[in-house]
Amino acid sequence: MARYLLDSGLIIRHFRGQRRAVQLLRGLGKMGRLSVSAITRLEVHAGMAAEERYATQKLLSRFVTYDLGGEIADRAGDLIAEKRGQSITLSVPDAIIAATAIVHNLTLVTVNQAHFQAIADLSLYPLAEES
Image (cartoon, rainbow, N blue to C red; front, top):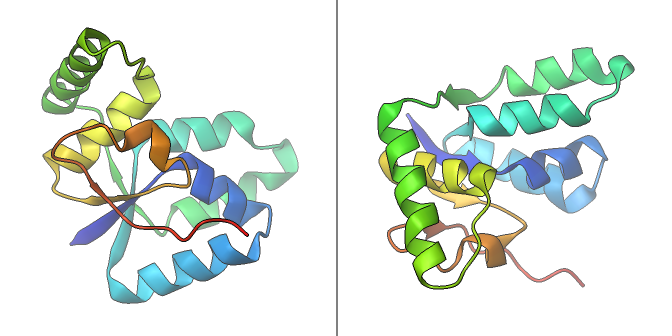
C-alpha cells in the first residue's frame, strides 16, 4: 500500500539529476510504496522531451497512480472554493494533488510546501530547507 504521494516538482528535480531529490525518492521508496496523482503524470508528460520518453515511463511505472474520480474531483473543487473564501488562490492541479492525498490518506511529498500548507487534513512530508 502506498504511503507517500509525490508532487510533480519532486519528480522533475529527480529527472534533472538533483542529488537531494534522487536521494529522497530512494529513501522514501525503501519505507513504502510511492504514488502519484494522475495530474502529476500529466504534468510530467507535458514537460518531457521526446528523447526522455523511455526514462520517464520507466520511472513512472514504479509508482501507484491514483486516477481522478468523482470523490477526488469533488474534494478538489471544495478545496478551491474554501480557499477562495479565504482569499487564497489554489490552482486546479494543486487542488487535485491535495485532494488525492486526503482521500487516500497519503502524505504529500512536495518541494512547494507553501502551496499546500494552508490545507486542513493534508499531511505534508517535512523537507529540509534548500541551502
